[in-house]
Length: 272
Image 1 (cartoon, one colour):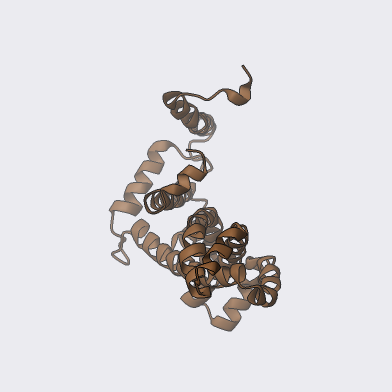
Image 2 (tube, helix red, strand yellow):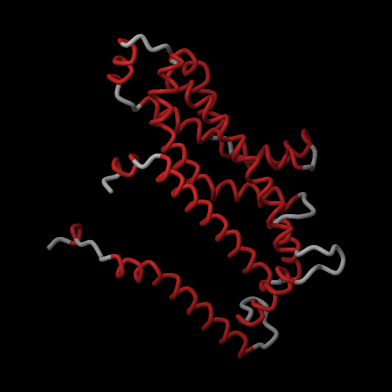
């Protein structure tokens, strides 16, 4: 039997999926034990017990100065900026991506501009945004929008253009207007693709968020990581990085569940 036809059973697939994480955890524990045996005050790979104590301090103990639970207050600040940026980017993608995909005149005007903008490194614009928009929330949210929206717009437009032309012709023969074709024929078919595109943009969105918070913020996950790095507080940085990863994974799983529930037929297109 060829390897290309070998499919692991569900239980085996779960074990195989867990294997890299187990190997990574074991490598960390071994490395931490070796370094701490040589230098008990080593900060690069803190012991698991140290990390647990730090998590308790940041997540379940109120800060003496502010009275806040730092992990949760940082998470709330970062997620507020992230959801605002992704929400605006999604709205722009729905509007401009759909117009670019179905209207040749709009595509001739906007498609080249969107393509060029999508090639601009968003982080290179960060100093400009801080100068023009200030150091507040607007510049941080704008950075996420600039980093995410052009990619979503191009992907949605390409998905709309890839639809069979016969569907548009059939709708036109039934006297459907451009508005009806856009909302009843094109939009339902490209929305699952938009959700998948959002999943792929979660990581870059977090990257832009953390970069903005690292430079100018007084709260947030990125702010906290770059605040404690000067003290080599890896027992804080590791849990924060793990927490950001868990948030991103949860968002990815949530979007996948949303697509499957709202558009169950999209799974059939994937052969599932």
